[in-house]
Length: 267
Ligand SMILES: NC(=O)c1ccc[n+]([C@@H]2O[C@H](COP(=O)([O-])OP(=O)(O)OC[C@H]3O[C@@H](n4cnc5c(N)ncnc54)[C@H](OP(=O)(O)O)[C@@H]3O)[C@@H](O)[C@H]2O)c1
Image (cartoon, rainbow, N blue to C red; front, side, top):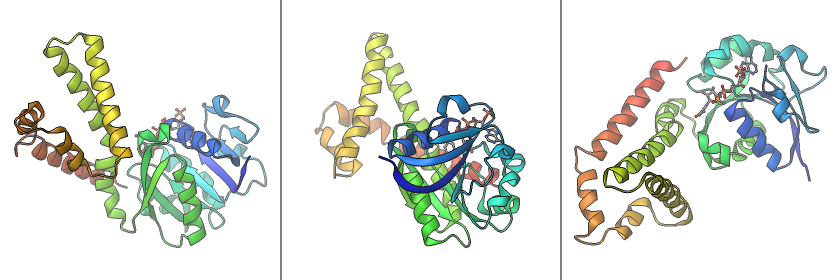
């Protein structure tokens, strides 16, 4: 049964926009209009009109939220067409690096929420950090929260500067976990494990450990200690990985580098 939700306009039906739409549909959110130059037919449905550009939005459609899920480099070209909804709608942007100030410069004196999701959103297991801009009402914030919860867990911050380290940790973070799976697979092969089995072991170890972490009330250090018998194999491996110049240094440097890059890209 469809849940009552105000009309939503979704701009950009790529990976993230498509994931959000799927999440809303699972929760029965309707109706909506989406704008995308090419991706329309895959998503069109009774609950959703898909049009190819802003000029084709049905006359009289009055969204309570306009969600920007286009690439950041498209913003300057795409966003001004939606100025006409400023004042009535909250604008929810998931564009990496596009600041509240930069978005407001394109939309006029608009109420904007900036959010940073991550790709596990595609399986409703994302984490999104959201930051409200000036003038966003409690009701608008609650609406954005509902829209983002459809793709996973949501946290709110008031300090927009935190979105740079957030981007480094959770926005880019899935790539680090996938890299771990790649390296485990390669190392397994190097030890003589056949390729198919190496792939299975690496994938299932990463995804199973994630599921165990999600299901456990214990923190990750406790779960790690639970696998580590004194003088055993895990302890020997962790002695390599946890040496001060190994993972602790590499992870800190990686997060600092990504944070710095996010600051460079901001605009
Ligand atoms: N993927 C991630 O890990 C991640 C994480 C956090 C945040 N984000 C942010 O999410 C946003 C979307 O990323 P994505 O990976 O979903 O990108 P994507 O797959 O390229 O999706 C963007 C979609 O917008 C469409 N589009 C282009 N110009 C448009 C316009 N003027 N009006 C309406 N739609 C337009 C694109 O169509 P065409 O393909 O025809 O150009 C495409 O279907 C980005 O700003 C990104 O920074 C992504």
